[in-house]
Picture 1 (cartoon, rainbow, N blue to C red):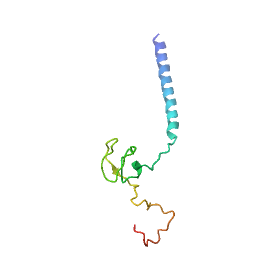
Picture 2: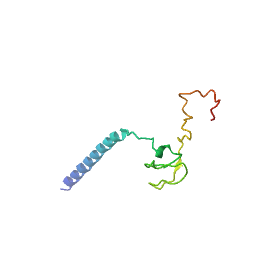
Picture 3: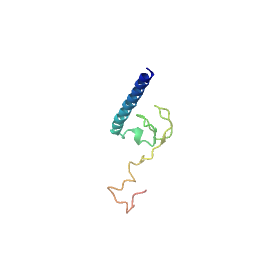
Picture 4: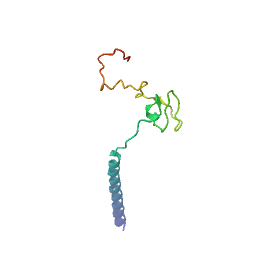
Length: 101
């Protein structure tokens, strides 16, 4: 009788392990699907942004996020004049006359 209970317990444990491994591979597939995020809102474009990019957060000065209360951080991608100085496509950086960097 003890052998039967032990065998049934082992089979149950094995089946639980196998079924949990199957769920992990399924969630890997779900994780590889990409979600398109609209990064045009002020939570992405302001000088100071929430690290969590909470909807409608962001400011021109330091402060805290009204949604999650985290401190704003400096937005490294913020361009004061709307001009992307890292983008070398579209214009020549050889001559800087009249263009102050």
